[in-house]
Length: 639
Image 1 (cartoon, one colour):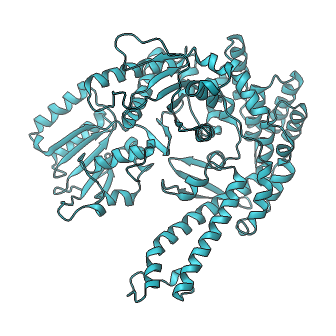
Image 2 (cartoon, one colour):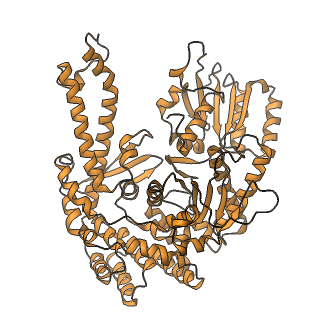
Image 3 (tube, rainbow, N blue to C red):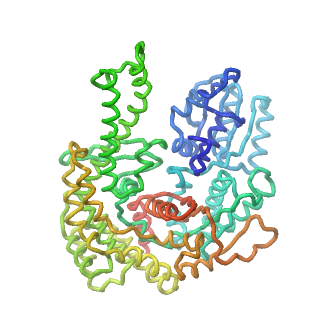
């Protein structure tokens, strides 16, 4: 990852590699070390939180390149290596401190470099210092650093604080004030880490009267304390300051249930995508098998095509595979070798052509492995599309206002698919309920079908959504949803999008694993016209209203004018918010769960704007079925 990478992921990698270089200046990469530089091999000790942070952006080869020969969990049984320095990257907890002291007492390592994922509180730090002093081995503690890296980055500008069930916690009636304060404090600490990593103090804008406001007030206080006690964070106005936009999940629930045709979103929805590991499933009759794929941050295919509609990705896979075949053929033709597998990298290279082939072999091999992985994922996605009729849910959600579409949905409810798609049906029903004032008989009929055909499906989520919609109408906070969600979800009906049912799916379903690379160019060029026009989601409208008010809708701008304003760099009280100021960079954070759909929608908007940069984060990046479970939990009190 080059030093010029200014994405959140790039900055986090730089911070982690500096830590692995014992927090010294210079490159941690041993392959770039000068002849005069001493190479130090080290042991890395992690806990579950830091392992999640590190494993999302660095791989085993990256650690080895940085001089890490062994990495272990702090709670595991570890072999003593008394002549090797140890880097600890751990949460500042009592249990971890106790374990470090125990390792120190046992002379487990030559020297200790302690790095905390977030700031250690003063009381615990003093206790740690006291225990080190009593051990009589304080000379072995070489460093103690607060790294402020307590967040997980899975895409260049997508991060999670890995705090589950926050939507449930903030919306349960029995959640006490202490719990709310604790979670808000935890979220503010995670955001503080992200801001320090980005090294630029933002202006804060936040929704009023909910979790976003709680977090904003705590974060403002924490940033003020940090600024007053640190000279490192960029507090000058040399560069334009970004804006941090804090939102409550309640701003838009429909996006959390939505089906999507974006490749990355589909992978997250149909399969399991967690911390850059994709778990796909395949079927042979009724027998199911699973396979895990690791998405490397350097995965060229994922980085290049992950944000595109599925048909475009299928077409691109075919093009990339043909390009690879041509490149490999060019090399083999020059060398007279029939296959790349016949090249021996260890053989004496007598000709320039053989030398060139040997040099290109690692890149070609890696490219083929990446393509094979995505071909397998695409084939598995196609099979799931066919077995669950997923394209139909997408079309209904895109055109939910049409009475004809509503009738089609009731027909779809009683249709049996090859594989169980009852939760997909429930998700679409929840979206219809949120976006449309459905006729009474429609809702009664839908619930009746679920109770008769899918008695195992928990409908408490529907109870919650009905109550949520009732409350938002009464409190008059649904105006943003009325102006944004409805228009953006539903005004895209046209002849192209209605062709999804007959056109897109039937063409895609003919592509089995063995045929996926055959003749896709002509197929994909036809079916990609069926994708409806991309629309901005509610969260994107909010971001546009704050970052670029001159081009945003009047309604959105008027609503966001009421957002709270905090400036951690201002002295004393908070200054009056500037009216409709433009920003080039933003950090958008949703309290209560986020998803890949919103991330991709924001990136598309930013890409269409001149020099706009948007980082998206949430308490947790969760799949639709997991959010459905949270709503089930909340809906139990309305049964």
